[in-house]
Length: 225
Image (tube, rainbow, N blue to C red; front, side):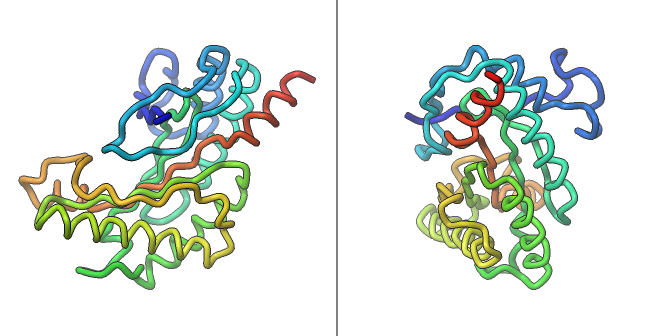
């Protein structure tokens, strides 16, 4: 089953408080409480013919959803301290998750799939975020602009996603935590490829942190106490 990865409008009425920061606002908690009782199994959604995550196998109550939301709020705050990281709250399986985007120009030198020395410092710090939330599953997606052939861009996006995954693992992020490493080529642009600024935004690596089955089971157990 393919899963829903939904970017949340942080200024929506449900979350209305402050759009400048997650600090002390509990966005993930709010979403988890609102969505938890209703989600059950994950809702399918195509992501460039690829998937992010695996379907959850148990219903999540509101209390458990709030617990997961608090974990994701904490992870998002930590990720925001990483230089070059753009952090966004999203939904996967109807539950709060964290999306961290690194522009390729920050991670890699021109025409390279090897992380730059500056990028290694940021990725090492980000590895600590992942290790501090060991029950969050992780997906890493590489993206490119549309310059060149689809075949070339597919290779570049795969190599860069794999390079990020490999470096995170070299920093002791468990290989078992990283569930998906995918190249998306230029199939999911976030900006126009008609300008250099837009192409730069499209050359990126996205890392998703989302609730594992173990996190969901633990949250349900804790909420039931």
